[in-house]
Amino acid sequence: MRPFIKNIGIFIGAMVLLALIANVVRTSKEEVRTVSLSELATSIQQKSVKKIEVMNSDLAITATDGKKMVSRKEVGESLPTVLRTYGVTPEQLQSVELAVVGETGWRYWVGVLVPVFGPIILIVALFYFMARQVQGANSRAMGFGQSVAKEVAADQKVKVTFADVAGMKESKEELQEVVEFLKTAEKFTGMGAKIPKGVLLMGPPGTGKTLLARAVAGEAGVPFLHMSGSEFVEMFVGVGASRVRDLFARAKKLAPAIVFIDEIDAVGRRRGSGMGGSHDEREQTLNQILVEMDGFEANSGIIVIAATNRADVLDPALLRPGRFDRRVTVTYPDINEREAILGIHAKNKPLDPEISLRNIGERTPGFTGADLANLMNEAAILAVRRVKKTIGLIEILESIDKVLLGPERRSHVFSQDEKKMTAYHEGGHALVSHLLKHTDPIRKVSIISRGHAGGYTLKMPIEDKHYHTRAEFVDDLAMALGGWAAEKLIFGDDMVSTGPSSDLRTATRIARDAVTQYGMSDALGPRTFGTREELMYVGQGMPERDYSEKTSELIDAEVSRLVKAAGDQATRLLGKHRATLDKIANELLVKETLEEKEFVELVGIEKGAETI
Ligand code: ADP
Ligand code: MG
Ligand code: ZN
Image (cartoon, rainbow, N blue to C red; front, side, top):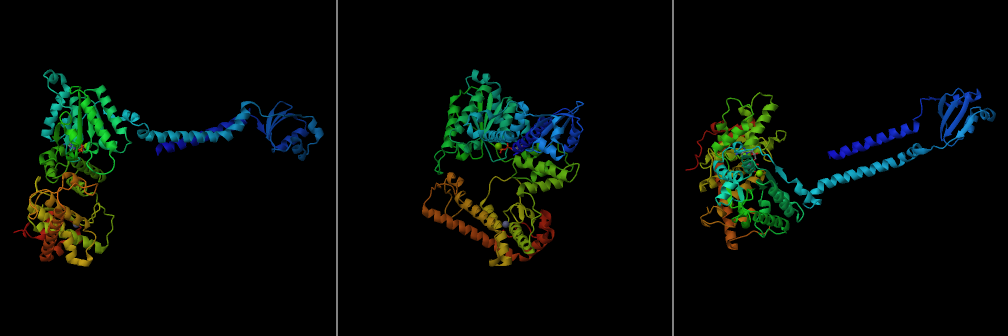
């Protein structure tokens, strides 16, 4: 909206200027004295007036001694009439030269036209400028791909290198080859080797795919042309394809170069996958990408890098040889990589000497590179707010929670009853989890509201985990229902709140995954149910089922059975340890937050005591 305000400003400024000009034009006369009509009348009677020029209501008076004066009369009244009222007789007036002149020349016209047409012209101009601005914003759509092409971002000089990417040793090694290709293409072509055209980076969001692609361009010292798959989706039919054409045309001019297509799954989903609706635009864009990739020579010096977190939904055509036939997987960083990533983002940040990055790495399993970058940044901001010279451990720990759970909402006011309910709810989760062996240790329990949750129970694995056992599924299920079980136990069936609704959803999902994806149900056996495609689009379009209606009923029954068993177990455990639950809830009402150590001491029971 800024340009709009600017326009208004210009408009008002112009108006003021015009008014000034009009004023000056109308009154710009030599320095003359202004006299009143009665003075004029007296002067006439004393015969000291030689000449009066009447111009509408303005009177230009020349005295007998040559001095000039001005005066004004009412419009419409003739001067002799006016003067008569001041006692000037027609005889006295006869000695004065009286001339009625019309305003002439440009001055007259400016005086007449500016007040009338000035504002109109200004308003028209204002609309014109505004219309142009709106068009500018829409030019992505209006230009039908043409003007858009000019916007394709190309970084001629990428400064990021592999040194800025922590960890990812294997990925970097694989990409090192690509760097070599770009740097010394002749060496390879001389040997008759074909340079790969496309590299697909696969991995969860925030794990550094974009960063890695940039680093390749930086290492090779080649331009980096990038665009995102999701940009195409909002466009009119045909725009995406023409944009892809322009992108590659530009790349050819800049070659050797890297073309980076982020979020390629947005356009590169399996075609005709029965998702319903028309996907013309998507398909045309995808086709154009394929055409372009086939079109350029293997040795033209362009390497296309695409990134996705959904490699499994990609159209197989994309993965054929000669296209994205090289694939690099990017995963969640392990403890060593987390330490290294923290190291990169701790640069230029003064940390307390007591802080060990290794230690922070240990506390952040499951964090992506982006999470860790975010964590360090939040800690720095906190330190600034607290007017500290260095970032302390407290800031880091608070930031971990913030990244994990969203900001605290201390302003959120709960009634005493709600607080009590939350204390028992979170206490229930934490206690059930603690009593079972195969759950992760509780790091923190709190009844401080964060994000949507009224309170939270934070558990975290001791080390990175890549697999989950069936025992873990069962125990996690019980923990997920711990809050619900506690509410039911303490406040009775009728008083269970809407609070646990997301817990119930979580529980159902865990149970469903165990049955349909991991084959952990005895009743259904070790097989998967539903294609990946269906799992991706549950609730969207037509699910692709690879099992019968009867099996579907069996799955439902099995999921219900698992959830019910877990709920029963949680209820039983909490009933048995009711006194401990009360203790936790009361402590939470006092302290609001219990750290791992406080919690363990308070409970006073060994972890996993109820699992035999
Ligand atoms: P993706 O494209 O996979 O979603 P990004 O490349 O956009 O992830 O990563 C987001 C940010 O996270 C990066 O800008 C960087 O600050 C940080 N980051 C991620 N991975 C790493 C890493 N391995 N080393 C250093 N920083 C990282
Ligand atoms: Mg990215
Ligand atoms: Zn809960």
